[in-house]
Each structure stands twice: as structure tokens, then as C-alpha cells.
View (cartoon, rainbow, N blue to C red):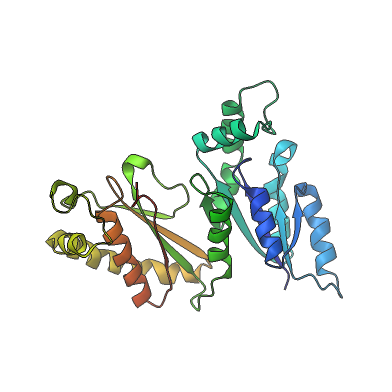
Amino acid sequence: MSEFLIISGLSGAGRSQAANTFEDLGWFVIDNLPPALIAKVAELVQNPGSETERVALAMGTGAYLDDLTPALDHLRSTGAKVKVLFLEASDEALLRRYENTRRRHPLADSERVADAIARERAALDEVKAAADVVVDTSDLNVHQLRDRLLELFTAEDESGLQTSVVSFGYKHGLPLDVDLVFDCRFLPNPHWVDDLRPLTGRDAPVREYVLGQAETGEFLRRLDDLLGFLLPNFVKEGKSYLSIAVGCTGGRHRSVVLADEIARLLSARGFRPTVLHRDVDR
């Protein structure tokens, strides 16, 4: 069965870098393909005698936004295995990138770049909602983006569901690429304990403090029950990727401890989660 990966997302969020990564992984990559040509590419790949098994299509935007969703629906109707990767980034990150490169946004004719970004974001909402995996590149350089994609697309998981856990600080903004978000600011904050303030959730005294709270144990027990219900149903529905975020105020103490504990719960259920502490060093 042919396998297609559609690389979509906001202009400036890293589509070309992603295309290069998949080319290095041995995928046949076509960059900036108009959606109307997806059906033709699928026909060629699925012809008897074709030796091309994995095709990555990096989809541009421009005048083709309205054509992308129907093209994806048609591709799935052929019986091909189709996954959609959507690359996201904050408005601030996108504006900074366009300022640094001095390139023109593809939708910015006479309007401001910020307005073009907003228009493109709205137009791609449907594609993002249907994506199998969303990656927020706001804080990633090209090397970190490559590592993130390798982590997502080369990992093997017997369950068929790849899982990841990220800790974050609310004061630095919500992650844009997660499925489930849990707020642990109901727990006592180690920041207000003088001896713990300079430490992080990676340090044993902070872990002992957070895990020693009665509310922590109750939260983890209830979350484990929820995961026990959700995970088999996600697998049954064919979901390929599940990202869980847990946040506290600064992303240095409580959320770090709980992210590691959630990863432990996932491991106990047969999954192999990756863990990212996004704001622990801020």
C-alpha cells in the first residue's frame, strides 16, 4: 500500500525544512505541489510496477487553499495510507522570521504581513483540525525541527499510537500542538519555598515536595483512570499521535514533575512516550 504524507501549515512555519528532512529519510518528496495534481501523483505511484512506496507532498498555500481539503478527501478514497503533518507557529514567531529573511508572505499583496498571516491561519483551520500531528515550530530552529520530526516519524510503537508529554509555563503561552492540556496550578507552588525556588522539577527535593502533596496522588490516580479509558479508544479509532501537555505558572517545578509522572503512567500501559520540558530553563 502506498503511503502519503501531506506536509501543510502556515507559511514560514518550516514546510521546506520538513520536506528536506523527509527526503533524507528516503521519502520521495515533491515541494509546493498544487492540490489539483495530488490525484495525478497518486495515480502514478499506485500504478503496477511503481517502486515508489512513500511520498511526501509539501503543500503551498497561495491560490490553492480552497482546493486542498477536497484533494485530500479524494486521495483517501483511493485506499492509500494518508497522514497529514501540520506545521504551526505563533504570529510573533512568523513575523520575526519574515522580518529577518525579508521575504514576502505569499498572501501579502498590499496588506500587512500580520493581516496575511491571520487570513492564512483562518483558511487553514479545517486542514489543521484534520491533521494527524501538529508541530509548533515557534521555538524551534531548523535543527530542532529536524530532531522533532525524526522523533515523531521514526519511532516504532507496538500499540500504533505514538505519545508525547510536554511541560510548560502558562506565563510563556500554551503549546499550539497538543491534544490534551492539564492545569496543575491547583498544587502548592515550590517557587514560594526559599530552598526550592532555584531548583527545578528535575531535582529530587522538588519532586519530593510535589509528589508529597495529597492532591498530587489523587490527581494522578484520576488521570490514570482517564488514560485507561481514552488510550484504547484512540488506538481503536486509528489515531497515530497523542500529545499531552501539563502546565504550571512558570513551567519549572510542578509541571515538570507531573509530566515525568504522566510519562511513567503511559509507560506502564505499554506506550513509549517522549518527554519535553519546554520552559524548564527559562
